[in-house]
Amino acid sequence: MKHSRKRVLVTGGGGFLGSHLCERLLQEGNSVICVDNFYTGTRDNIFPLQDNPNFEVIRHDVTFPLYLEVDEIYNLACPASPIHYQRDPVATTKVSVHGAINMLGLAKRTRARILQASTSEVYGNPDIHPQPESYWGNVNPIGPRSCYDEGKRCAETLFFDYHRQHGLRIKVARIFNTYGPRMHPDDGRVVSNFIVQALRHEPITLFGDGQQTRSFCYVADMIDGLVRLMNSPDAVTGPINIGNPEEFTIRELAERVIAMTGSRSSITHHPLPTDDPRQRRPDITQARTVLNWSPTIPLQTGLERTIAYFRQLLGC
Ligand code: NAD
Ligand code: UDP
Ligand code: UDP
Image (cartoon, rainbow, N blue to C red):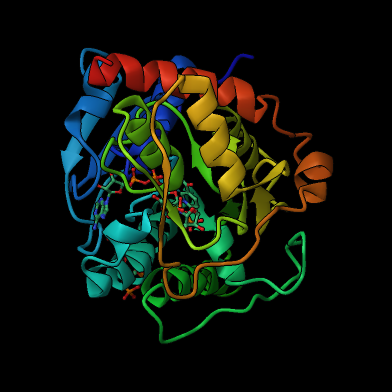
């Protein structure tokens, strides 16, 4: 597909999703500015892109104003793994809210299109299953996950208020659990934890009874969904679910990873974290019909690729 060159800002571009997104946008011939304070992201993630003359990295914390000239903004800056976003919960709310305000201010001044990386966490511990975009969610406003869940909900509010009040062209993606190469080995999310533990033949840390469910989307599918959303007509604002509707229990995931890695690891039980959602699966009817998008990579294939990545990284 041919695209005219755009100046695209990716906040959080040094992170897991952000680095894949920068790579994809450069492949399409765009100029990409990656803004990151490397709180959870790393320079290694974007190292292969450094020699591209259309790629620029700015170390910056998006809770502070940023003045650039751009055509599009993908706002991904925010720690995404519970252990990281709960380490400094005030910073998490600040990046979600102040970061969104600054990027919306930037979009307002430059008339750029702006996409928000929102999350399935806006549905909280859902009592409607699977979750359609029309569901308002069941979120605890004062628990340990609230800094992230409520921060992201407030960011959605800001996006729609800037849209209504200032006519901004907005896109809100509700991202469901995504995995793949370039997740940090210490990321803390379940897919990387289980793979790293299995490859090292260490105990697999299963939280709770393992009957809670998640639906895992491979990173390439996710990036394709985000780019399609950004390129959709202005009338398409979202919020729109992007994720893989194949649903698994966490115990099934643990058993599958052990089998696929030929690991000697055993499963060990740990307490379920507070407010850990019981079930999660996207209703992707809107993504299918409005964006003509649906995931193409099943869990088995995605896990094979992710396991191969970690094998090489860890040398085991
Ligand atoms: P990640 O932690 O790998 O990436 C986040 C990036 O944001 C990191 O590079 C980090 O250094 C950067 N960052 C954090 N605070 C910042 C600040 N104040 N200023 C500038 N940069 C900052 O996580 P990810 O999985 O790549 O997630 C990217 C985005 O997608 C996040 O907004 C996350 O909430 C959202 N999301 C991800 C998932 C998923 O499963 N991966 C699911 C739902 C939503
Ligand atoms: N902002 C920014 N870059 C810009 C324009 C604005 O970081 O190019 C920030 C600015 O610091 C402001 C925020 O975005 O606090 C919101 O901007 P807006 O124009 O909506 O509000 P105002 O400037 O009126 O407070
Ligand atoms: N989980 C687990 N062991 C781990 C990490 C996570 O059993 O080492 C569980 C966690 O309790 C949750 C699910 O796996 O039920 C997904 O957790 P993750 O942190 O990846 O994402 P989120 O809870 O934000 O969906």
